[in-house]
Image 1: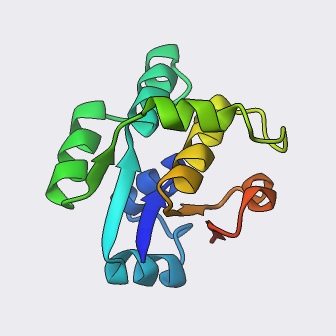
Image 2 (image 1 turned 120 degrees about the vertical axis):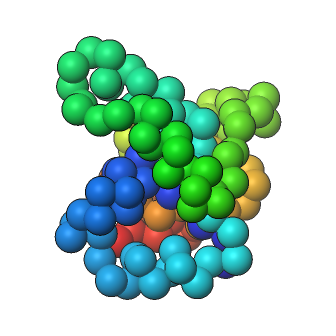
Image 3 (image 1 turned 90 degrees about the horizontal axis):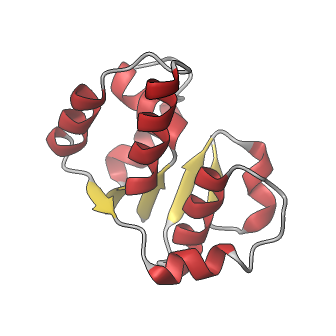
Length: 125
C-alpha cells in the first residue's frame, strides 16, 4: 500500500504522540511507500508564522528526509481535481490532499472524519 500522510499524522509521527495509534504506526511501517505532500509544509509554514503552531520547520524537514518519505509536489492535475470535489470540507490544505490521493491514487491517512465521505482511499485512524 502507498500512503499519503496528512498534516496531523505527520506531526504526531514525528512527535511520537500517543494520538497516533498502534494500528496507524503499523500501516506506516508496512507501507510500500509513504508520501508527504508539499502542501503539508505550506500549511505548517503558515501556521507557524501566524503563531498558531509551535514547531520547528527545519526539524520537520529533516524528519521528512530521515524517514525516507517521498515528497509529493502539487501538480496542475491535483489542482484541477480539487474543483471536482464536493464541499464536505472547506479546508484548502485538506482538500488538496484528498485531490492528490484521488489523482495518484494513494491512501490518505487522516484523523479527520470529515474527509471520509470523499473516497474509499481515505484511511481514518
